[in-house]
Length: 229
Ligand code: CA
Image (cartoon, rainbow, N blue to C red; front, side, top):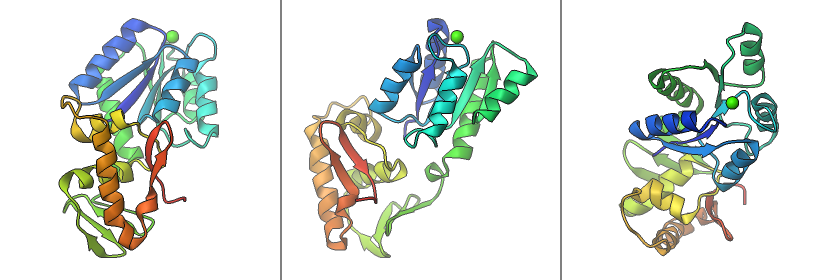
């Protein structure tokens, strides 16, 4: 699954450098030049990780970090602070704000990628776990099998990929085009309605086990996996 990394940085050159490095490592960089832009991106799709510049126009990265940690939607998103300061006090302040890591500018993209990968490994065990269980549904990522209360459920490979993506990214809304990018791959041309077809098939497969309501339609936005009905 392609990781989505939100880069909140007012210097365009740094954003572009980071985006490029991310794309070379199979990740998607989404750019925002200030807090407002970052919030719009988060509403659009919750990122897997945020790179947050300390000094931003308007609201500082530190204040934004504190806000991220307060709000339910963003509380669990790992973030790495980017800063020009190397001051020990600032480092501590950054980590106290909830940052998962801290990088002092100028940094090499190699170091940045290594830090991102380390934070993602620590913070999203769901992506690495062989088995993910939610609300009585279990997905065995190694065996490519889905179970409802230990009963195996038959579904096609596309339904399996779509369901495993949604289950490993629960409580987040994905638009049809994001799901196409994530599940079908960005290069393939597929009509957005294809997503609806496969969602219907997943629901049909889950319905006998009364788990079809986990795949929720969010009007005007897309789909979400949630065991909270
Ligand atoms: Ca800055």
